[in-house]
Length: 165
View 1 (cartoon, rainbow, N blue to C red):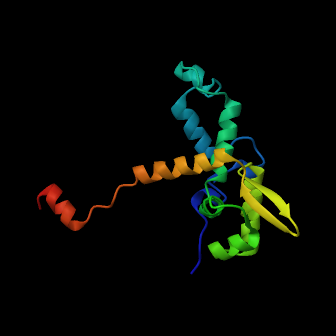
View 2: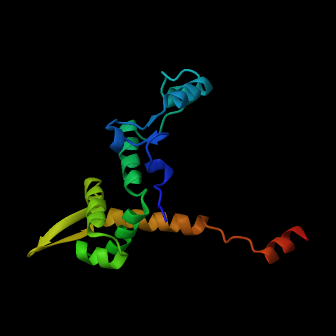
View 3: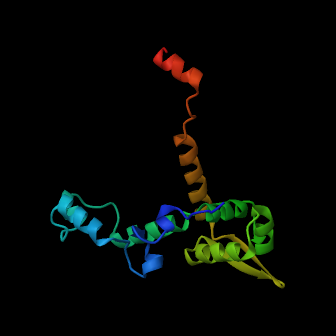
């Protein structure tokens, strides 16, 4: 069975700055022209266009988007979930998650680059832990958001009661 990457990780329609080396995401040219047609003068900033001040600067928005990018892959979120319980080695994470060692190492590198994880050398082993308490808070808030927004799927008997059929 072939496993395909999620649409945001496939080349083509949408490429993240990691793939392109750009400071913002880039779209195919036909999509940019569609956006420009629909949004009028793109030379003005969003706040000028809407007549409101943003809650934070574009630099802060960029850093927040970087953090959200690091959380956009389920394997990275699973690794962070394992680290909620305490520091772990790559071997520990590999066994816990059933992932290849190279895949765990790659995801840890991305998490380190986004200051979500830190590494400490203990003897000959390198242990990985959440960078600080902010990461724990971020994960718990994200989990709380998902749990509160997830609604149970309606069953056939529920639909009959609601619709009367």
